[in-house]
Length: 178
Image (cartoon, rainbow, N blue to C red):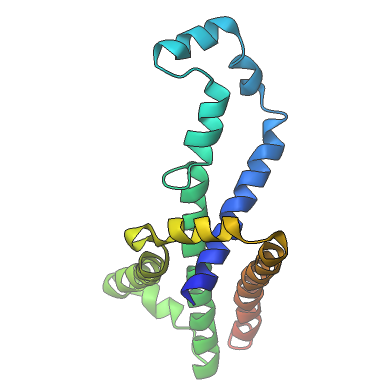
């Protein structure tokens, strides 16, 4: 479970890196950072190549880059979609729309929201972020042959699509009680 979840995180992180690389070809700031006056300005701050700094530190840094943060948010979002899909299925099984009762009460509403957010945080903390486990897995995954990475990327994409299909299909079940 832990290895698979880390591979899903790795796949999402690498997806963001590839999209960023594609978008960097049309990024006007890449050209602005090459202007001598702009280069001189950033050199005063200790940054010799702002384009390289932007790529390696701001976006692609595995520890605290924006792609790592966005991938972490996506991992939490996948769990939330699973939770909400299960909640929809539960409502369909009992034949009552419980969400109306939850939103009417302030206490139930906050318990529902906190529970919906606490579970993904706890799971991701345990499986990914505790002692930066994902960094160990990232290094391990980077060393694997391309055939293994393609296989696991396909599995990860299957998990992501499966979660989305499960979430959407839960609304079809919900339509039976409304």
